[in-house]
Amino acid sequence: MRSPFRRLRSSTRTTPSGDPRRPDGVAPAADLDGARRIDYLDGSLADAVASVSRRAYVTPFAVFLTAFLVLLRLRSGREDLVVGTPFAGRESPETRSVVGLFADMVVIRGDLAGRPSFVELVRRMHATVTEAVEHQDVPFRRLVEELDPGNGPPDLPLFDIVINYTGDRQRIPARWGDLVVEAIDVDACTSTYTLTLFVRDEGRLKLELVHRTAALTTQAAAAFLDEYQHLLRSACADPQRSIDDLAPHTREPGDAPRGPAA
Image (cartoon, rainbow, N blue to C red):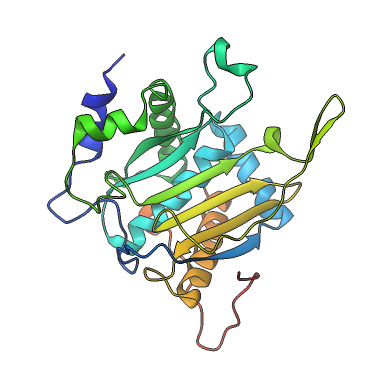
């Protein structure tokens, strides 16, 4: 097994073309003021994602992650991208039955070079995520101390863009004996990261884009979600298509944004 530090030194290195973490049109922002944009995948698109994941023998997360990286590539023109994603941190038997928060961030590098097909990249990213998960017990803080990239904002040292997938195993309300847990939707109007895409299975697949308002306008956030869904649909309709041939839908002037904003 490779050391997580050796693996991530290449993952967090700034490429000659610029910062691999951030796409064009998403500006760095120190201001934590945030907003969110919500939309839902229709049933046909959700089924298409599930079909691609089954045929590729990967999780749906690999499909959502790959489409996210392809969109970031299209916006930035870069083939080496770094994003973060949280994992539960409950791999050891000692933590599985303990109440508490053990989640920590894992760094994911997206290598989109070589004109791969979408499904080939899905498999590539599945392998990357699998390798990253093997090292999820290494605290994120220790990674930062060890790698010391020095090429980003002090509060976001390794990445400032995040994707967070919650599968149906974590649906709530949930019940443990007489204890019932329900979700309370709280809009804190802040954004820890420049851009975070949440994909949640709530019976329907919910997309929630949380962003710093100094980095992305309301209109740009709505366009981003539209582009993501269009790209995801195109990729799932023909997974053998090269990612170079995938292009997001461009909103026409005067088009009303879809989905609620908050």
